Amino acid sequence: MLKGGVIGFGRMGLTHYSILNTHPDVQFVAVCDSSKFMLKNLKRFTSLKLFSDYRKMLDETAMDFVIVATPTISHSKIVKAAIERGLHIFVEKPFSLPAEEGEQLVAMLNGNKLVNQVGYFLRFNDVFSAVKELLDEGLIGEIIHYKDEMYGRTVLKASKSSWRAQKDMGGGCMLDFASHCIDFAHYLFGTATSASGSVLKSIYSSHVEDAVYTTLEHECGITGNIMVNWSDESFRRPFNRIEIFGTKGKIVADRQEYRLYLREANGDGRFQKNWNVRYLPELEKGVRFSVRGADFTNQLDHFITCIDETRVDTSCTFAEALKTDRVIEMIRKDCASRSR
Amino acid sequence: MDRIILGDNQFFGINHMSEEKGIATARKFQDTSKIIETLDMAYECGIHAFTFSTHDRVHQICDHFRANPEKYADLRLYPVLPYAYKYAHSVNEKGIVGTIKDEIIARSTAGQVASLVARGGAVIVNQNPIEVMKILVDVEMRMFRDLNVRIIFLQNVVTDLLLGIGIKEVFSQFAAYVEQKYEVRAGFMTRNMPRLVDFLLECGIECPVVCAAINKVGFQMNPDVPSYEYTLENRHFDALAMSIMAAGAVPPEEAIRYVMGLKNVKSVLFGASSKAHMEQTKDLIDEYCQEVCP
Image (cartoon, each protein chain N blue to C red):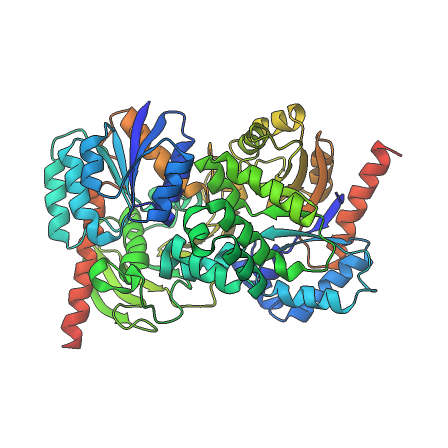
């Protein structure tokens, strides 16, 4: 039985707790949060050890792993403290900015056997996993260009109090939305090495960007556009879509379906010439327990399996997520240089 | 419990097969009169039972029902609460606790606030999530006032989140409050039916009402089809089946024969926006029931 703790018991912390609290190999023993309401009620209804100071929690509780779901600004110091105490760590995305701090954390991990994962759950979506397999198979030929988008209605008016509206807390659409798209592009196309034509737009927010548009170029020569906007009211909930163009066809996919266009039918009869559409009911694999969609369960069960099997070099590691943090800095730099 | 209930996902852009199709139907129904036309079509087909999430636009639909009491004399509603996306902006802005304090109290009526103050005001809200839950139920149920409500459902994301956290009092108190105040049974929507049913029985809720996707291919059925079939066969509860065609993966007749043949399935909840589809589904269910118990 693995003993775990959660630091940051907001929307994501609660979700992760709920999903893993039902895992047969996991027992939660401690929670740390700044909300008195949360702590008071957890005390009333659970036997968890409760803390408002994460250092105290880490010092006083014997645990195997910790889930970190606090605002981005605090990731670095919490993750550092957790590595020092030899804990396996799952941290919400984005990993740790500025990237220098993330580099130090990755260096600290060097050689030890701690499982380390960042919450880029799109990699664990059953449709997107299927898209990755299609690309690896070379079905659409040589990949030329992609368009990687995320839209939502997270911010529809100027925010006063949310940490998401404050740049120094890790707010902004770049960290919340663009980070997902960049990580997903890394997953499909390898490391991005440059960003150009970057535009950051504030729509309703005064201190952070509400939209990001940029062109990335990857090590392998593939190029693509990242387009994200969290102030688009026409979307009922966050929406991700990717369109990938190759020499033999193209793929258009979102979290529920993919459409594959092939110039010629593939040899084994699975796909016909021209359009092939597959929907989630066909692609989805059940999970042992689902809260807010199977993707979240898949990513956390992956984390626990890695601990059980002592596998550290897996998906969404700190080192992988650090690449995304670097690209975020590249985009900001590119945008700043153009507006000068 | 009605054997056939029309759902409302199609009206608000929710489509389990395709987000793009969801967006397209949301465009079709952006004018509330189009939703009412569709509800009337169902009513004419003999479907008088509807589920409604507590989407802001459902206010207008309920106003329409209240304004035409004779026309909708036989109407039966199954509210599903809360419509969580309504609070998404507020949760981003103020966090979960801030949303409960500001948003929900802001939406409650003067009477509710007065009763809250009488019970200890903000102190209660700060200390007692059960009291918060009761206020939330009242706030969300307000739009259905004076209408014939049969079961009040807890929406699946909330049910499953709470199920994972595993606090029994929240479930038993929700059921007790709904029964005491609204004199109807509480229902629970879920994507984890086997686990939920066992948990509700452990909570002491007798013969709970559970609404979940039930279909041959296992779509949105966690962990898997055999676990669902085992629970349906061996536990005492009332099941309401939704997504029976798995968003199009199972043909209608096959889908209906499968779910209606399962023990404990009392009701089918389905989404449709055309009269032909409604008639077809209703006829197939009626035919099957005739065949089984003529």
